Every structure is written in structure tokens, then in C-alpha cells.
Amino acid sequence: MKSSIVIVGFFILGTLCGVFDILPAEWFEGGVSFYALCALMFCVGVGIGNDPHTVRNFRSLSVRLTLLPLFTILGTLAGAAVASLVLTTRSLPECMAVGSGFAYYSLSSIFITEYKGVELGTIALLSNISREIITLLCAPLLVRFFGPLAPIASGGATTMDTTLPVIIRYSGREYAILSIFHGFIVDFSVPFLVTFFCSL
Image 1 (tube, rainbow, N blue to C red):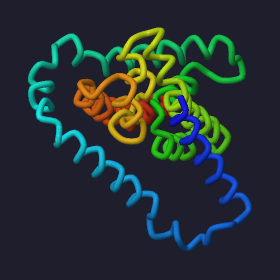
Image 2: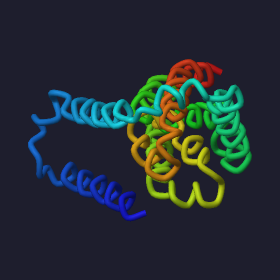
Image 3: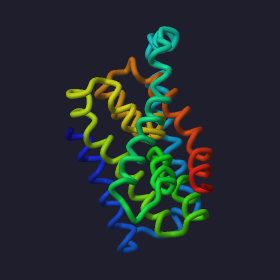
Image 4: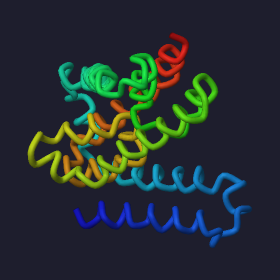
């Protein structure tokens, strides 16, 4: 839990730096965040590669576990459909489009903004950022109450990058391959599902 609070603390610090222009804007025009993410993925890759059980864990991945991305997608869309019953100002396709971001806020919010306008795009951004932050903060609780697969399902498309270290720490290193596979499949579905629901 302490490490999750530290991560969110850095997120808040970064937000404040952006709001008050503490850091030069030129730093971020060259894609610094992209290179930081690449460095994170490199470190995670080295950590997984040094584990002699990685290949064995991938080979032993059961067919049942490979269906986890499908259930994550279906469960999220079902939740978005239920949310549309409560949010009467938003249509079912709009709620489904927001849900189809699966925490991939940078891509989904851009698509939704182009198709449906800035307001829904902002809602998608905040919704998907919240999903990622909840996964980072609540991973220990999710594992304790719902099992090691819960943070993976909660993380959506982020389980192969930003939430992967937290998942490895609390679910176990043996779930690293599943987490990456899950993130890749869910990530791949985002542009197709978001554009589909936006076009309805």
C-alpha cells in the first residue's frame, strides 16, 4: 500500500508542476514521458528475463487464464451499460465508448473527443485515469479480497506497462506473463471498440 501511495503522490506532484508551470514545457515536447515509459518497460523486462521460471510460467498458462482479457472486456462493457441507466444524460453508446477505453486514457480520450466532442472526451480521460489510479492504489486490497487475478482485470489495458510492477509485487511474479498478455489483448481492442460505439 505504501508504494501505491508514493506513486499517486508523484502523480499529484506532477499535476501541480504542470498547473503552476514549474517545469519547462520544452521538456515534454520531445516525448519525455514516452522515453520514461520505455525505461520502465526495459527495467520490468530485465526483471522478468532474469527469472528462470518465466518461460515455464508462459508454457503452463492455462486456457482458462487466456480468457481473462475477454472477461475483462465483457465485464467492463456490462458495467458501462449499467452506468448508462444511472447517467440519464448520457446514451448507452456514449457510456460504452467511455468504458471501452479500459484505462488507455491517452488514446481513447482522443478518439472520443474527435467523434463526440471535448466534454465526453474529458469524461473519458478522467474515467480511465481513475481506473488506473484505483488499480495502483487498491492492488493489495484487490488481491486480498478477490484473488491475484483481480488487479489484472482492474488494470485493463495498463497491465502490460504502468500497472505491471504493482501487479507483479502483489499478485506474484508468476502472473507477469498473464498480465502482459492481458494488457496486449485489451489494448488492441480499444481503438476498435471505442470507434464502434462512437459511431452508433
